[in-house]
Length: 157
Image 1 (cartoon, rainbow, N blue to C red):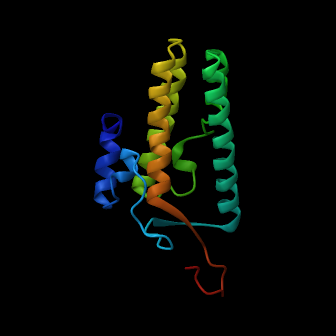
Image 2: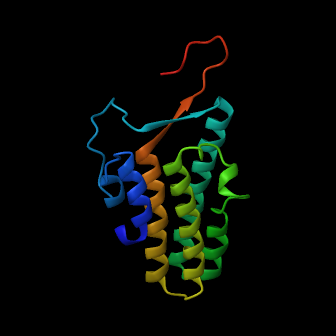
């Protein structure tokens, strides 16, 4: 899996984010501790992002169901729902370099997974989906939302 993430791994190492996130290992961080990098977002953006994550999970479930039926057209249709509109630079959080790199990597991996459906080979599609999920996992293991404080309010912790 590391082969697909070489550029991302270098960015992550710069921030000293543990590589267990890329290796598919559970986090060794004790319960109650959250050492992920905080990305400042508004409450509205936090809700939008959480909604997008829920939608992505539904899309991935539908993708796997279509793949189990060897419905490659259905897999492609489902995967296209993971693609984002507009350039990466317009998305919240991309001012953080490694976040931007993960987002670009995710987008590229979705494109590769879509292309893999054209081979009608379940194994190739599953490998591509594994790479895509690796970006999801790395991002969720590295970052957390931090709500921006309203003017005059105490900063969120």
